[in-house]
Image (cartoon, rainbow, N blue to C red; front, side):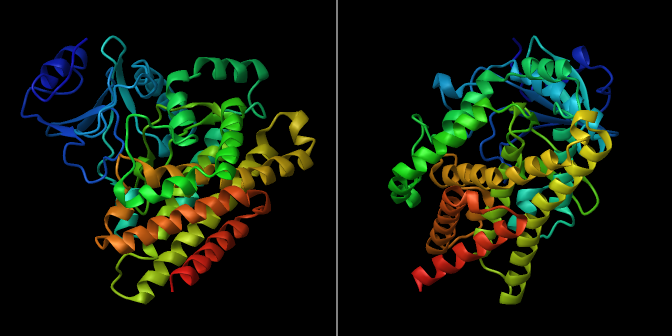
Length: 413
C-alpha cells in the first residue's frame, strides 16, 4: 500500500488521476496539521491545487489520525480501511438524490484506500462560523431538507422492499458502527482520558439512570433500519455560505434510525447555544440575538424535516403507505422524542472526550465561563435524555432548553 504524503502526492496523481493537470505548478497541503477545526479527524487528507482547480485526496490507514498526540491503537477504535471505498459509494448515492448538498467524487483507488473529491473549502465550516457568532442563513432548513430527502428516498416507504434490504446489506459498516456504539453511547474510551476541567462530570454522566437510558438508545440505534443515515452529521461536517451548503464525511453511513441524524445535528446547535450563553459578545443585545437565532434554528431543524418528509410521503410513498396518513403522522411524531434522546449522547461524550472540546467551547478563554458552558451543556443533555417522552414538538425542544438554562443560571447565582 502506498502511504501518501506531501512528497509523493503529485506522482501519485499523475499515475492514478491524470485528469488533474500536474504539468504546471501544483500546491500540495496536508489538511488538519494546522486547521482550527480538525477535532476528531481520523483520516489523512490532502489538498492539491493547480491554476484551474483544487481537489481533496482522502486516505484511510490502519491507524486513526486523530491528533498528533492522540493516536489510538486499540482495536475497537481502529476502523477498517475499506470504509474509504464505502464512503466513496455513499457520496455517489447521496449526490444522485441531493446533488446541491453533496460534493462530487472523481476517483477511487481501493488498493490504496484513497478517493478523490471536490474541494469545498470555498465555503466555510459551519462550526467555525457559528463559534464566531456568524448567523448562517437557512442553515437548519437546508440541513433538514438534505436529511429528509436522503432519509425518505432510502426508506422502505419509497423503495421496493428487496431494494431496501439490499441497500442495508451493502452498507453494514460494522467496524465504523462499533465506534459510535461504544464511544458515543457507552462513553467507553479505554485509550483516552477525560480532560481535567470536566473530570468531575464523570459520576454525573455515569449515573445509573443515564447509563440505563443510554443502553436503551444504543439498542435502538443498533437494531433500527429505517433509512440510510449519515451518523456523524454535525456543524464541522457542514460547509456553508448564505446561499450554498455541502455535507461531507459520510464514512459512518448505514441503515439506521432517522432520528439519530436529527439528534446528532441538534446536539451541535445546542452546544453553540450553551457557549453563546457564556462566551463574550460585543453587547448583550448581540448575545440575545444570536441565541434567538439558534433557538429558531433548532425549531426549524425538526419542523422543516417533518414537513418535507411528509410532503415526500404524500407524493411518492408506495400506495400502501399513502393510503394511511395516520401512520405517516405517527411515524413523524415519534421521531421527536427519539431526536432529543439521541442528541444527549454526543452532548455527554463531548464533555469527557480527550479529543478536546469543540471549537465553540475553546473560543471561551476564561476557564470558569468555559466550565459553566460545559456544565449547562451536560445538564441539558440530561434533560433531553430523561424527559424525552415529554418532548413531542419542535417547541417542546426549545422550551426544554430555555427551562434548563433558567434552572442552571438560578443555581449559580
